[in-house]
Length: 429
Image (tube, rainbow, N blue to C red; front, top):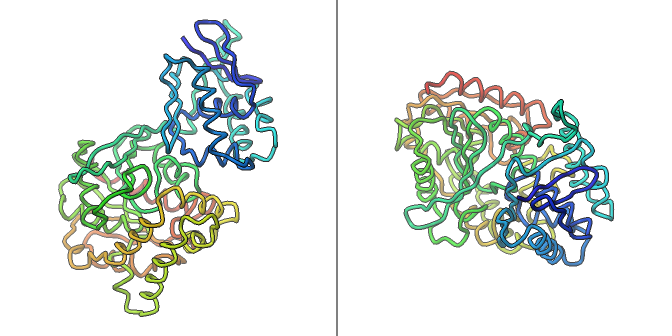
């Protein structure tokens, strides 16, 4: 039986005997981080966290994973790694965290410049300090973390064979969030746009999310990238989960996808929650300058999305999060690159330009909450007003934010989540 203990350092035993861990402080810090998180972490995120100053970050990560795999033993299947992500699934009774955790691990990254890891350790020590010891023993019990509900990721297959990744978090009433671009089931838990939003829902409901085809952890190499395919993928995930009746959340272009799903399946959606949504894409804009901007964005993205310079991706960062801090914008820039490649990014913009549910959304007789930031620079608040005016059971609420999606450091976020919770509470189960 393998057991991991985090105290002043990290130690590993197998059948009661100590196991020699790599001498590299970064490798031991990586083991601690993966063991506590217990979820799949994107390789790029790990490289940024531990090897951001190294000449070959991916090589450093590969070296560390090889040493950790050897230390855990050939028969241990806890550590899983593929070309995109890494996950260490440690059974609850095999991980113990002492209140001293982090005192030496804090310097495990040698350079002392790894701020994300240092911040994680601060949170770890605060949680470890609150754990309960058994009265008959000085041995600390495993840490029960209520700060981060565990996420499980699985795959289903759409009607055309496309692999679609979906995730489940939390307990309670099932709620499904439709996919939207710029998502990544793993990485989005660590970026300002999505982390607070997802965690709030996961602490109250059984929240299901999935990555759009061509994006995130779903298949990127797909022939059909279209609005109908997006709706079909939503149908596929809801069917795979065997959800009979549920609230459905649609964000940005996911709002139109959710509207169309509710039109096709009125008996399954108990309520719609639309955030920053729009009924028509940029090609339907009566202003020729806005159409030209959409075409220009496609060209810029096609040629610069994967470039090492964030200049091209900065276009989206500033339109999504104009009120974000420089640190938040930098993290969002990095996150965008993880979500998809340049070719698909341009294809997404093209598809979004043709979205149009104006003729059908009036048919949706489902209780609907429409939320939109008043200063949204990515999608005009007029778009949500059109939706609320056309749908017979919709109510509109505007939020005091300039960000496309309010982030959890601004007052508008709390207002948005309170409105969502109140809306879901009055829906029939």
